[in-house]
Amino acid sequence: MKRKRVAIFGNAWSYEFVQSIMRGVIKYSKDNDVDVDTFISYTSVGSAEDEIKGESNIYRLPKLRDYDGAIIMGNTINTQQEIDLVRERVLEAGINSVSLETKIDGINFIGTENYSGMYELAEHIFKYHGIEDVFYVSGPKGNLEAQERLKAVSDAAKKNNIPFGKENIYYGDWSYYCGAEMLEKWFPTNRGIPRAIMCANDSMAIGVCESLTNNGYKVPEDVIVTGFDALDSAINYYPSITTVARDWESMGYNAMEQVLNEQKDKSEKLKRKILKSKMSIGESCGCVLDTVVSEKRLKAARTTEYQQAGNISFDIHMRDVYTHMRDIYTVEDLHNSLSKHYSSHRIGFEGDNFYLCVDENFFIAADEPLTKEIGFSDKMVSCVNMYEKNIYPLAKVGEKDILPDFARDDHARVFNYKSLYSNGRIIGYAAMEASLLQYENYTLYVWSRHMYQNFDQIERNNQMKRLTDELKKLSNTDSLTELYNRTGCDNIAVPFFGECISSGKNVGIIMCDVDDMKIINDEYGHLQGDLALRTLANAIKVSIDDKWYPCRYGGDEFILIGECEDEDELNRIINSISDNIVVCAKETHLQYELKVSVGGVVIDSEDEVSFEIAMKIADDRMYSVKSKHKSTTGGVIR
Image 1 (cartoon, rainbow, N blue to C red):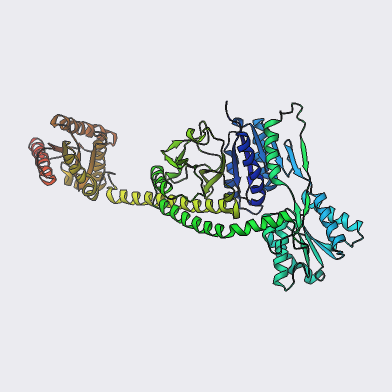
Image 2 (image 1 turned 135 degrees about the horizontal axis):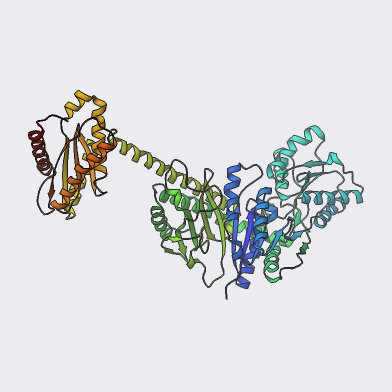
């Protein structure tokens, strides 16, 4: 029976929320043998349009009709266009779906109510600590979660007869920097430092604590500070933040259960599930740590040294990856170089199952990029295929699945997918077996930025190669006839003569010379002389195949060097040149009859004949023909 599969969409700037949700998801995957594909972006409201387009493109990757359900981490996705994109794709696929913490039209919902936990925390501050002077740092105006939390504080203040009006509220943007800046911007002009500052999330609370410390205040001795979310960073902070906890791990597990085990409601009635929030006591209010928080902090302290060592290993790893990508020109180059790296230098970040899928068009240097701006190409190739630590050959992807066939096996797996793009163009995507460490401190984002730079280097390589090839072509090409010039003959055609002899192939040399070229220039002018040379060049081009190298050797003298079986083949080419001169001359409306002397020789690969001797033989035969022409026409052009 086909294993069930769930698609998850999220933005990992909110990495602690994503980590918590994914703990529950991974647990469910293991418990119930379910595959999970997680599509991760990193955008923010202030991101450039190209960045939003490139990051959110990963949401276009899955063929959602192949999935049994979808989970949207709605509160993490920062732009409405991304929400609309995911919503449209999920509804079009007609699969069970649920949004977490943010309601989306037409999608089921699981969320944590914000009110009860924040109300409980405000009551604790007002009653237990006896605080009457409180200031509140809110989330953005218009944000529903921010409004619910603010209402809880306002209601608790009203119940306890605590003064709380507009002058007690500062509207922030959820960020650490907002909390840090608020102290400098607001209080000097509006009021003194209050006895308690309650914040709508932990990031702003930490920012406030840092700013207070920098200004000589102690938390909680001088000022009590609280947050919301119970992030690891808040628990591990000193003093640990008194906050409001939401059981996101259980939410992740419940979301998996809901999209897979509940029948799709034919009435299209949406399901709403609300989980309770609750206060989590820390040190920033002046209380003693509760047991759960204390254990989490101890665990974090034990892993700090390991994380520092892991960061160093990660940096070394990314430098090694760059080394293996900096001199790449083709998809085969990339496969061979990175396969060599990953077969011997794995630190575990990408996991034991890792796939790097790239658009083949990316490696083609052209005036206009051939890669897409939106969506993924039908020429996707997985150029790194690491399955259970073993490296596999190049594999096409996209037609049946977004991973190679062998990637889906007898084991349930959870994969993270990250879009790769550069300069507004889609390069491809990476898929790696999910690890919670990949979200830690935005490490997956840092990994992807390194890869963007590496692919930029590959693009520069190919553009430089293209320019170099064009310069080489110009330096080796005669501008009048567009055949090889004398330099091109020496650099390309003459070495080909030697290659044929070395590989046991016979080689032919043909010499051509325009009869009475001086008379044409003197009687009809040099423009007509140029036209005569171009006419001969055109006749040569249509008389030979790609095994021959035609060159304008100098003046009105031409040499052709190519693979040639015998004298019969050589004579057929010589006769073809003579016949085509007549045809080409009519097409160019020459004012005179163009005659050309042609002679050649075939050199057997077993004969020890140098190029110089072979050329002299061909030249002598050409001049023998020229002598016959002069004796016939008297050397007068007609």
